[in-house]
Image (tube, rainbow, N blue to C red; front, side, top):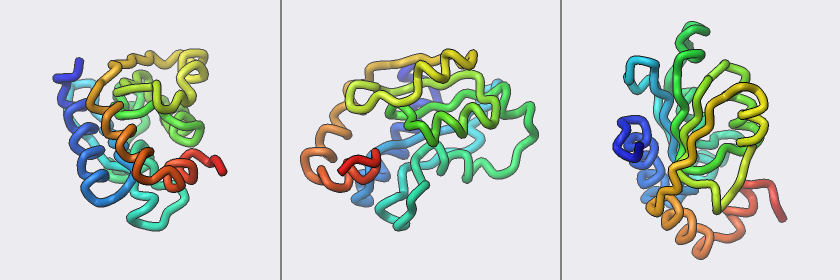
Length: 149
């Protein structure tokens, strides 16, 4: 699964976010036929944004799409999605979410499953390493990102 084009794109986005000094979380929205529709990374630090998490960035970069396109798509994300990103996946009817890792942060996975979304967790060591490094270097920024003091 880590060889999937969607996961590779999400991981590249996380690495780009890291290189920019931001939270190293990436995401990619991939159509049912395997085309990357949109990809992005957490831009909260870079843009001074309250909402530009990776999944939101990927959806924004995908642009407006027909409802059926979302329903057949998979959201790849390097970290378990927070409540906001979980809600965005549900709002657009995305039926599958592939997560790089969920040990650093456990988001709305159970709620996604309750709503009929297939959730796959890869347990990617690379994703864990990116997050561990960021949290060690920028604990205040990480807490801000997840809404903690």
